[in-house]
Amino acid sequence: MTQPLEGIRVIDLTSVLSGPLCTMMLGDAGADVIKVEAPSGDQARTWGPPFWGDQGTEFLAVNRNKRSIVLDLKTPEGRDALFKLCESADVLVENYRRGVPERLGIDYETMHKRFPRLVYCSISGFGDSGPRRNEAAYDSVMQAFVGIMHMTGSPGGPPVRASISVCDVSAALYANQGILLALAARARTGRGQRVEASLFESQIALTLFRAVGYFATGKAPAGKLGSASAHLAPYEVYPTADGDIMIAALNDGLYCKLVLAMDLPALASDPDFAVNALRVKNRVGLNAALKARFAERTAKEWVSILTSSGVPCSGINTIEDALNDPQTAARDMIMNLQHTSLGEIKVPGIPVKLSETPGSGRRAPPLLGEHQEEVLRESGFSALEIAALKPRQTKPSAGH
Image 1: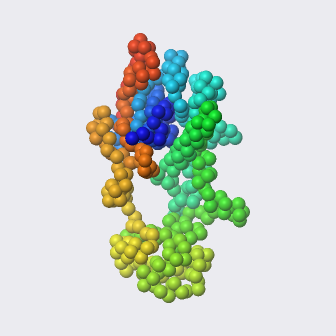
Image 2: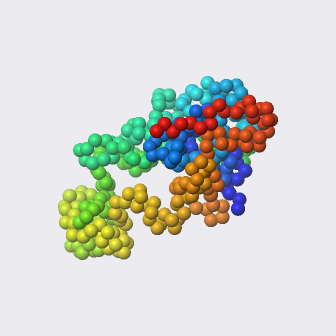
Image 3: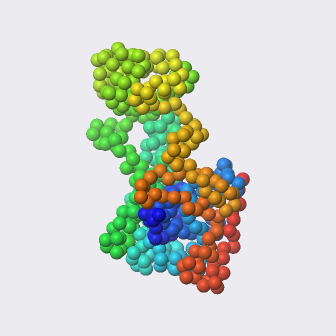
């Protein structure tokens, strides 16, 4: 079955998380992704614990459906090899520190002159303009900078980092979208263009109603509220007889379903809680009544009662709980891949389902330089050229 990006070749110069996740998504859709690594390899290969054998699990999570080669782009030979690869490439993705592509002679302006059809994607911390363009940025730093940490955590408690790398992941998603848009434009114009995505801009975009609320009122969003929402109620975690439960009764209809299912009909007709704005205003009194009733049953009992009544809710699961839930298997969200040195490994599946041209897991994450000869031979390199480009180091130590 033909995949959406079959026939598209991607040169992946990225490392760590945002860039590799972006290119993995292209590979999932059928693109031929060539991961070009320095002789030392993608640094995420050695990050851990945890490790799977001698492989860093962060690397394994975002590098399926790729072939790996090693080129030292600090040398003329390495750069010339990259240029030759780009002759048959459609997309190049990089997430170097600002200024590095220029020093290497592989910046957008240079590459666009040589390869005008090439879509060139840059993923950075703050973007390529503005006073902060040269500042380093990692996910946790960006969470602090854009206000995520200010809003995350318990009231009165210290700032808290979201445990999922939301800045890296969202930048990858936006970069992926930009590449697909640029490929669509190229189909009409015949010309490639530059695609820019950054951790900073992806997070400013994700502030959504928080930002609009600030623009509307001139007031900064409320600080840390734990699991609660500043503008919806009841919409937070409540303790039960044996654990916690998350409730999302975010409109008047769901609120009525909630209190009736809990056998609290007086709350449905109480004028203090008639609409959401009043429930937010009178949150303390509402929560006191709800908490008293939640304490009478277990979390599992409440989930059963409320789910059957159409109220969105959940117990507080672990990652293990979620991965072993039957819904995960039903939606093919665990993928088994055959790794060259580890044997069968499991990784999260593909979250977007296409009915006619679905994505697939064709390759496990590669070893460093695993496809060196194969890729270079396909790209027209002679045996002597391939031998000259043979990497000195093809397996970094895991460092654990």
